[in-house]
Length: 173
Image (cartoon, rainbow, N blue to C red; front, side, top):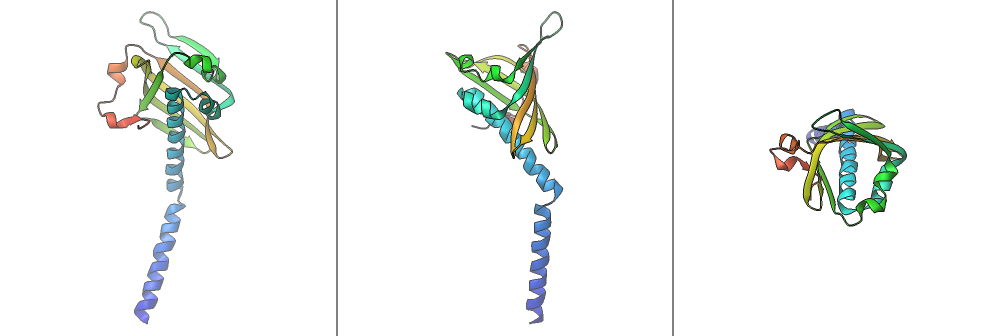
């Protein structure tokens, strides 16, 4: 009987510790980081499949983007556009776009997050450039959405930026 009572107490302690770990700030942080990167992956998939409705759902309506074209001579050319520009169906007509990223650096403090990552961009299967993506996310109604984005366009940077370990490339599949 005594051994049975000890087993019950031990099981209760183990269950309580497990519940505490599941609710720990570190566990919640890890879950949120996965959710932010899942939103980033959905963005890349939407670009790569021409899913303009998917892009619209990910963007906040007020968001803005900045594209910085790195030139061989002179300063980068920076162009700002509303996020709606990027979800215009005309941008996809007659072209297949594909974007992927790797080794993201993620900063998070609920309800905001920033993802900084090298990326590669292809049009019709040909790499046109690589660069750095910086996406600002905000959690609205339980969903991570893109509040703003900026990126470099570096036609000559792919050799420098591509990962040696291709298993780091996202999204998978």
